[in-house]
Image (cartoon, rainbow, N blue to C red; front, side, top):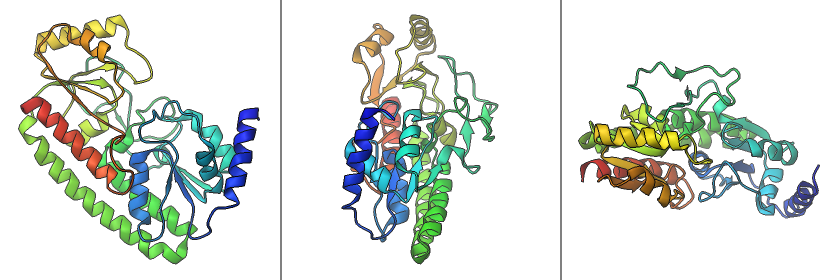
Amino acid sequence: MSRTLLSMVFAASMMAQTAGADGPNVAVDIAPVHSLVAQVMEGVGAPTLIIPANASPHEYNLRPSEAAALQQADLVFWVGDDLTPWLHHGIETLAQNATVTALLQQPETKLLEFRENAIFETHTHDHEDHGHEDAHDRHDPHAWLSPQNASQWVSIIATQLSAADPDNAAIYMSNAAAARANLDTLIKKITQTLAPARGGQFVVFHDAYQYFETSFDFYAAGAIAISDAADPSPARIKEIQTRIHADGIECILTEPQFNPKLIETVIAGETIKTAVLDPMGSTLPIGKTLYADMLRNMAETLTQCLVD
């Protein structure tokens, strides 16, 4: 074990001694999933967020308080190795006594394969994959952007919490039922929000949105980068520029941490609108309302960029 991790374990141990004992201690990796867990736990307790909403989930160094939350945890909910492979060792080391649920590995989760090309072909649903064998590195990890997946996840979360805390099982199950009903309503509202923009063409900063696209049958024309962890190649930028010019792309959707110089290079004098999508809810208050607010904001941003 590294000296850094040893120090973190010691700090976590000291902080754990002062932890409260009321209800299960629950740790969650990212803000959108934390929001779902918070909905299910309402009236019993509140989960602890491990990765701040304004931090990249791909690279992050745990603070002692976050390490302590993992060590104290009775349950851990995380998206899984495909999103945060660096967190795997921390969970194994610090949360040895916790029930750990990797949501991408649950059979109820609908998985989509990565799209490798800069330009996305006409959607045929052929890239969908519901299998879960050897899922690591083969599937797009941004599955929380599907409200249908979120609906499945609140049921999984409620089941795990009920097993760990049977005295409050009725509350968890009731909250999960309410969350699913709210997600059904959210899907209908977002469908209505997107209606005026249907037929518009847009490009995203990096390919993180196909779960949202598939949920609402509203697809991006391409992505400037495969991921937000690496800049695109000159060839990929050229391919996107050609598509923008040839097909009259109306909107480029960036992200809060995007490189403005890169966007200027891609636009290269074209008259095209830009707007910011936030797939992590990084500017929203942490808690039970974040998930719905995040998806609503994404739909409204997309519609405004294409219509206004």
